Image 1 (tube, rainbow, N blue to C red):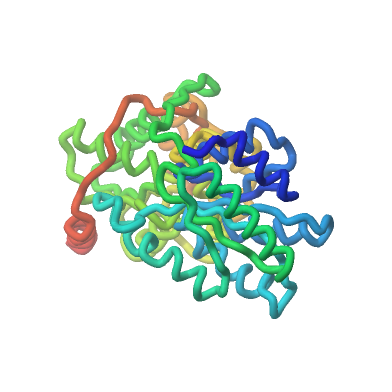
Image 2: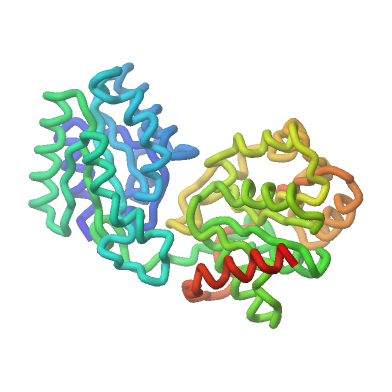
Amino acid sequence: MLDQKNVFQTLADHGVTYFTGVPDSYLNGFCNYALAHCGERNVITANEGNAIALAAGHYFASREIPLVYMQNSGQGNAVNPLASLVDRNVYAVPMLLLIGWRGQGNSEPNHPQHKLQGEITPELLDILHIPYTVLSDSDAAFESAIETAVQYCTENRQPYGLIAPKGVMADPDKPNNVDDTYPMSREEAIEVILDHMPPDTVYSATTGRATRELFFLREKRNETKAHDFLNVGSMGHASSVALGIALSTDRPVVALDGDSAAIMHMGAMTMLSKVNAPNFLHVVLNNGAHESVGGQPSAGHLLDWTIIAEACGYATVGHPVTTKADLIEALEQLRGSKKAAFIDCRIHKGLARKLPPIVFDHREAIDSFINDLNG
């Protein structure tokens, strides 16, 4: 991994001292250094498109070149503002784009959600007419890349990409940082839900730890996985998949969401104001962190999710739940609400137990899930 102190000094030497984006495990060294040393000049956003727009606003107000960081899966969220806000034909906004390159050269064969994105990461920048450098684990090469990038941004008032393969901006091991903010772990909360929902309940689990923990809980409990949709990619969309299912079946449907994922596309919650889905339960497993990519803080614990959910048309119990007893009571109370329901389930950070990555045949799993839904 590059020396992150040198990385930030090099950026500062070239006038780049403002950072915004969505954390990525391939960039966790960079993201954690920014979190520790940059204060209010590092802003973690809801999604990557937000970060592009925020960076544009910073440039308008300061004429300083900002840096936006993201996992390559977030390029899709960034395309619209890159093409219609910062492009040379619109408002011509210079910025550095630091992109973690998951799936490079099919480097993650057990995670097909990264395969296509890995293939098209450089090509997306080409399509957007954004030049780029693929970084290497060399301080000298990094300094040269930043000099080239900043010169291009300054002369052309356009973005420049910095693509970071695995190991360039991140430690190989992510720590399991467990805190004691709330008594329940995510895995414990999921198991409570499994114990107290009907056996035929359908589950849609969000990207990251929730999918992994649901997968291994099914194995631990010797239960079928045919009721479960594992949203291993497309962060922020597990609840919409769940709602789409709920509107097309009479079975109970539970979205096991994360706070960072729900924040990323929070507008999806407003759909409940327009549809009738009494069999839909949306649970945000809220640890206030981007845990799957390094534990950087989210706004999860700062928001009153209950008020937001009620305003969007959900039934709630009027407050967050923080204990197993609270969660059981909420599940029982909301079961008879006759409308879509929502629970802000406050949990602590960290894994309840050490779990390996999930490895499964995605087509086989989804075909089994479809067959289960269709009888």
